Each structure stands twice: as structure tokens, then as C-alpha cells.
Amino acid sequence: GAGVSQSPSNKVTEKGKDVELRCDPISGHTALYWYRQSLGQGLEFLIYFQGNSAPDKSGLPSDRFSAERTGGSVSTLTIQRTQQEDSAVYLCASSLARGGGTDTQYFGPGTRLTVL
Amino acid sequence: AQKVTQAQTEISVVEKEDVTLDCVYETRDTTYYLFWYKQPPSGELVFLIRRNSFDEQNEISGRYSWNFQKSTSSFNFTITASQVVDSAVYFCAPSSTSGTYKYIFGTGTRLKVLA
Image 1: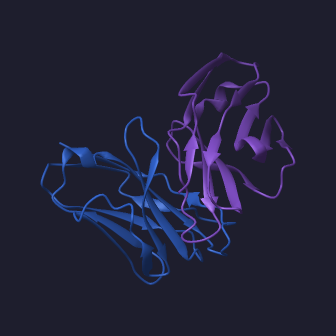
Image 2 (image 1 turned 45 degrees about the vertical axis):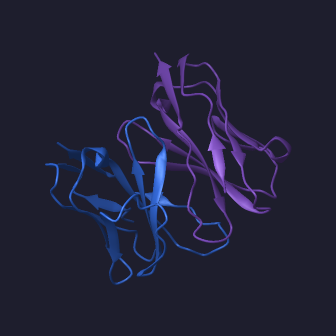
């Protein structure tokens, strides 16, 4: 079946502009995660959705970052007034959320964001 | 809080050599899961294995094997007879059994397999 998809695959923007990154999870996966991977860094957790709710937003680096999920499916990560330090690959993952930590997260190909 | 250390930033081996990637984790959870992912140059993370903290049996899958030692909080990954296609960044990540089950990733180990 189809995996996690993300769009766009690449985004170049100017400092100060807003950007929206989209994630389409695997059908039926109720849990959705956003991570960020900066150059030479590991993956940094940003936000977790269970259905349309976000019980864990602890990784969002500033109030310029926000995310929503609608219909228990598609999620959008929005970065307002982008800064150069926002340049990174943004990865989305989804899982079945069966609980107990048994879930395997399946990752999308990522969106590479470059802020000039 | 959980933490993972992959001390080897980059490893280079010649094709057909065996290579072991180290992973040391910290967790206060009594029950947890450990994962390994591969990130090839294309960028997409590929799931390799999931292991729960109750199961200390080593696992082998083809050329891949994993050695989990709870006593030393290590979950090491060995590739036997490495191939050029194994070149990638490999991430180890613990996940708790409560809360959001988010992964705590380290900085990964970049493996270069030279022909």
C-alpha cells in the first residue's frame, strides 16, 4: 500500500516568509509525528498527533511553528516568519497507535526547507 | 527522560567486511522498545527492527544481527559481509511505553562501505 507522503519535497523560501508543509499518513494510522533533521544533526521531535488532537507539542521550537491535523488524516506544519535556522529536513511519520510503545513509525521522504 | 548515544559518528569499511554500530541508551522506563532505522542517501528512514526490553535474545535477519544487553543498556547492530548498498546513516531510537511514544533519536552513525 501507499506509504507516508510529504509535499513539497523541496521548498526554498526567503527569510520572513511563511511556509506550509504537508503530510499524508498511511491510511488508518491514527498517530502522526513531525520531526526535524538539521544538517549533521539527529532527528528532533516536534509534535505528536493522536487523531486530530496534539497531546504533545513539546518539541516545537518557537511560537512561529504550528501544526494541525484534519479528519484524522492530513497534517500541515506551518512555519511563520521563517528564519535561516529553520532550514532543515522536516520528516513526518505515522503509526497505528496500538499503544504500549509497540508501534513502529513509518516515515515519509521529508521536505527539505531552505531559508535564504 | 530518554537519551541515546551513538558514539561512532562515521565508519568506513571495505566491502565484505563486518561492521558493528554501537548504541547506548538511557531510560527511566522499566518497559520500553528499541528501534533501528536506516537512512540511505535518498533521505527516507527505513525501519529495520523493533525490540522490547523484555526480550534479550539476539536477532539475526540475513546479514543483519542485533545484540541487546539490558545490563549495559546497549543495543548494537552488526552487518556481516557489508555491501556498498549498506552505505547510509543508521539511527538507534528508544521509545517509551507511555505517553506519546515518540522516538528519541541520537545523531546517528554514518556508514560508508567502499567497493
